[in-house]
Every structure is written in C-alpha cells, then in structure tokens.
Length: 59
Image (cartoon, rainbow, N blue to C red; front, side, top):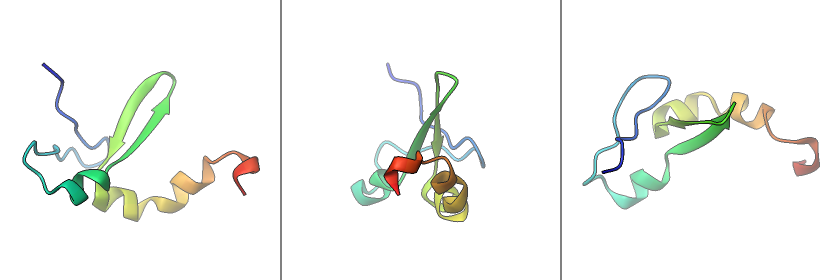
C-alpha cells in the first residue's frame, strides 16, 4: 500500500477522496533524493521559494 502524502511544511495529509482539482494543486519537490510534498495552501504561500529553485534555462 502507498504511503500517505503529507505536506512537508504544515503536515496536512492529502485525502484519498479529495476533489481531483485539489489533488492536482499539490506540488512535489526532490531534494537529496527525497520526495517532498507541499499542499496547495503552502505551495501558494511559498511560490517564490519554488521559483527560485528553477534552473536558469527555464527563464
């Protein structure tokens, strides 16, 4: 069975019966080989941090 997806910032857990659009709003990040998730609220609050990690060729 898959492990539950939990926000690495606030600890909220993604619900299996969540609205599909809400599920798509979760953001994932790999750091040091570890997969981390951000819930939609935390992703919105930390969007500048996320954009700052993009490689220069993206811009």
